[in-house]
Amino acid sequence: MRLKPRHRTCLALLAVLLCAFSLRAQNSTPTFTQQMFHKVNFNPAAVRPDPVVDVFLLGRMQWVGFDGAPKSIMLNASGYLPEIRSGISGSVIGETFGHTFWMNAKFGYSYHLHLGRMNYLSFGLGAGVLYKNFAGHKIKVEDSDDPYIDYEDVNDVKPDVDFGLMFTFNKFSFGLSATHLTAWAYNRKKDYFAPQEGYHAFLQVKGDISPKFAIDPYIAAHYVNGFLQAEAIVNFRILDIFWIGGGYRYSDAVVLMAGAKIGKVFSIGYSYDLGMGGLKKYHSGSHEIFLSLKFETTRKVGEVTDTPLMFE
Image 1: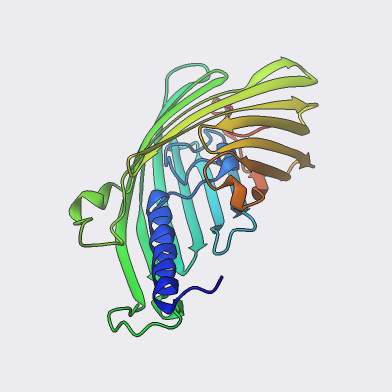
Image 2 (image 1 turned 60 degrees about the vertical axis):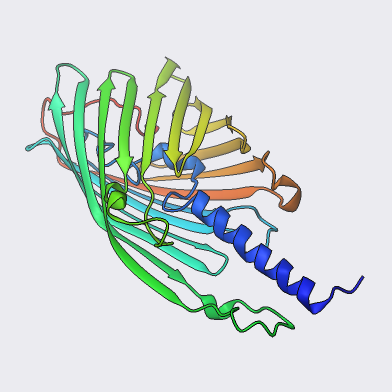
């Protein structure tokens, strides 16, 4: 069946609007399945209270097979200074979705209160910028004589501020954070690129059962743009070297993951999201891989702890 030019124009505009709506739904907060291993991108207080420099690189291909689907990359880095009980972190996230490119770069600082034994309460503040680019010139609407169909390139940079706290109690970690706190300063009805506040919570347990086996559950909730995204993941750790696990992200995907440590420095992991949402018939799932490098620094007596922020 051959559509009339007017109908093709309407369908093209509908596709553009659908893409824009989907982009706003995950505006400023891309979905990452394996961010449970390094959380400073959404909580600046989540820095290990151990003198370790931790670099975490993650790449994600979302909704494989869907034209213009999101492709994301994240680089997190953090280190702890036991002499002043402070954590330093940095995070850069880049994502392309259709004709839009989005980047968030920020630095973070956290202060850790030692509450005795292996108990810590940390407060973190992150600051940086949000950059967005919309390549309107790439949108082509065929057979259209409508003079109002004209898309221009748009570039925008805005300041960005995050706040977080985390409580570590023996094998448990609990965190709360708020991201993009500068969003209140913008008119979202007029400014398409206005950032959106995000509110995040997580609970993670390092469940050592024996020297050879452990069960590590992780629960998180992210509330952004009026959307609540909740997930629960359980990893089974073997010999403190390999792990395999799975979970569920509410109304979105079933999650499968596996990974391994390679020596004392490197760790690598892979996850696959089997889509469960309304778009599942249009794509073959989402793939994600990460590489982690950990370098131990000079330790100070009395500051070594065992926390569940990353498999050890």
